[in-house]
Amino acid sequence: MTGLKWKIGQVEISQITEIDAGDVIQGAIKEATPENIKAIKWLYPHFADEHGKLKSLVQSFLIKSNGKNILIDTCNGNDKIRSDLPQWGKLHTDFLKKLNAISADAKDIDIVICTHFHCDHVGWNTKLENGIWKPTFMNAKYIFPREEYDYWKQMPEKELEDDKHAFNDSVAPIIKSGLAEFVDPDHKIDNRVKLIPTPGHTPDHVSIMIESDGQNAMISGDFLHHPCQIASPNWSMPYDSLPDKALDTRRKILSQIADANILLIGSHFPNPVAGHVRRSKEGFVFEI
Ligand SMILES: [Zn+2]
Image (cartoon, rainbow, N blue to C red):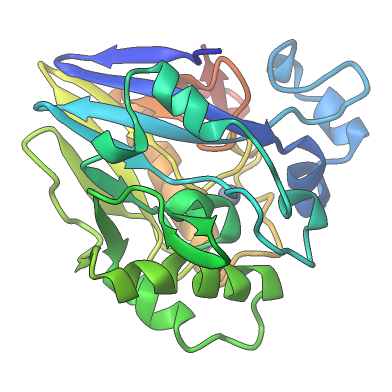
């Protein structure tokens, strides 16, 4: 029942998986055809199957740092109504039991951070109680990138309906309950965990950097969705709010983490989820 775990110096990071995301991610990256995927040999056996189909997950990560439980992203959640991606709606998963299995009840979460406001990253912010969306993590401070909130509250016409619904059912109730804290995209949580700006997929998208005892890791959020985009950073997705910026960020961050020996924990990557971006003759590869 328990997922993977990583130790970064004094910080512990645990995986909590919600559902498989293979079809959605593959459908969204239009260059990710079976033929193109089969040509990237290092994707095998972990990141693609023999038919050239991508493997991926919707998942959260629990960071334990300085005695605090910090939950990064909250997947789709249960009972949400979704129309663009119906397979991500009306779910009844055991996400909270999985959290409980790594010794963290919902009431024990101190901080929730949403890397961005897409429906698969904010869902468990709330749960349905007597027909009303209530904060799932009632004792937590919910950290939201300020301009991410400013963008989505306008209900931008060009964005998916599901993400606007997610704002209403999974973000607005947190604001109403007084548990939200708006921050800059380089906000420091403590001396070991901080946000870094990775804009493009959404306007104020952030990733999470962890540094302790000389070791470093990064939880990606969605500046990339699958290891195939390490091989081909120019493969983008139609859900990027700012496509040129997203491409620029992906190239820049991949270069930075390749040069700095940072463990990359991919928010939609399938197991083993984490590895190092290295430079090769062809560009970048992902080593696990
Ligand atoms: Zn996502």
